[in-house]
Length: 370
Image (tube, rainbow, N blue to C red):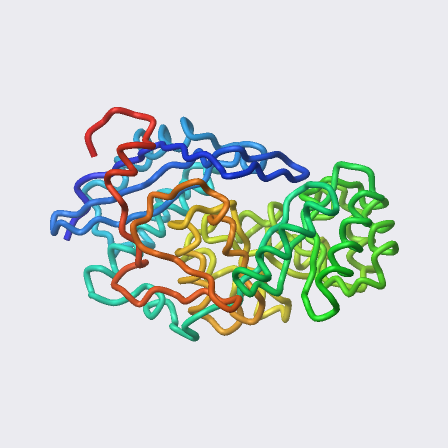
């Protein structure tokens, strides 16, 4: 079995409503669908979400690096030789989501070739995960209404609240309104996407000390070294590294030098192979992990639940899996449901996603024949 073709297909699907947060906003899903085919007729699939305001990648740059740099490495390679492939991909600096997509597609090929779900190949610890929903910037009443909707319709009882880069009072008031509306048993945590200084983040911690928040993600830029470490040292709740830990080396630096005390793992950023290394690092250090969301499609969210449910350490906390519900449509032909606050990992061979070819033809931005 040899890889004989690689396709990077840019597509755009509008959001039902825009998602606003401190480092940017998303009005449409401008992603890249990756398909890696083999001489045996097996096709591995992954969804790549470029985030220029986070990693510097764009749709054109992802397509270019895959077609011009990664495809020559992949074509002619055995997909089972993943370590050899990754060693060659690693020579190219950055491009984290493009590399992650390649890794997920290779695992998809492996699972399909064996007739086994990737969820089981990775570990198969549990069949489902609790779901956390990410609530974007809005007025307090609007944020409350969204949280109540997801609580009532899907049974979600964990919410990540987007904060940062607006007056502190607005975010504190929104958190307080959410706590009052949802009650004491619903879990809340906040994510500033580097939107504040360390001093401002400390003010927020003090102003919300009575709300029972469980995590504070990326309160300030990790480059604010002394301020961030002082914040971590004095915080009552774990400070989560997300975009400051986009690689294994970055995560090791932040966690071992006092820059963070918890870790967000995103398969859209580190695939399955490097995500497993990150998970092992976190478990070895005795810190908690959240399975994060890269504003993923249903294809991307499937990869997240496949990985998160495969390991005990990544399944302890609710995973951010619900934002695909805010898309107006999706390329995935395979259903993905949230019921009673949980999502089940697919048990079909591979990652467990089939692509709706009619929808791909409708939303793709190029004119090449798939």
